[in-house]
Length: 187
Image 1 (cartoon, rainbow, N blue to C red):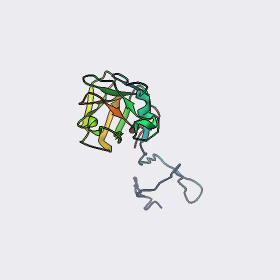
Image 2: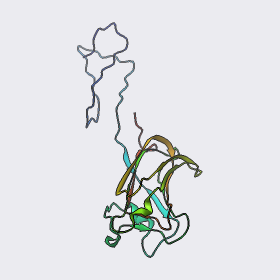
Image 3: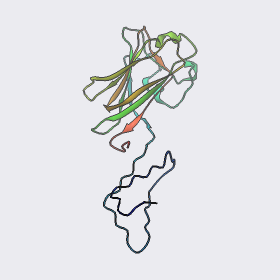
Image 4: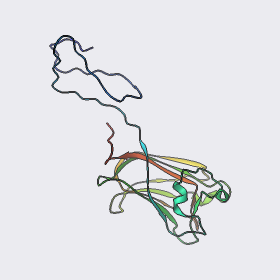
């Protein structure tokens, strides 16, 4: 309940309450007069989607296999992207977001686990703006199975690029978590 009627601003702190879809304010008596109401909360980041591409493709191991929702890490299960041999292999996801871009908080990468896991060692993950300029970078560790790279809410992201350090780059799955600013906004 709201306290003293002489108080002009009242802040009510509820702590973490999940599953809230609305706020109702009820008064006592005949009238309820409100000048301003602010509701602040935490919106769970969503899985961002987009159009994947890669520097080259070995056989039928297309870039889209890394964002197909299949987390099998063995290439024989048909869900691992793989570049053909060459210098500076890369994989990129152009995010399907509005004109403001997305706010990205983390990227999760599943390495293949059946053969030559070292190929993902020290690869870089770049968050890109609309012009392809790097906004933030993280480096993948060595011999990782699943790597979660945390970002501190990088705003205006239009793409995610993973650049390998070896002759091939193969990815079992990539998830980009954040907020599509054309659809919702974190509070």
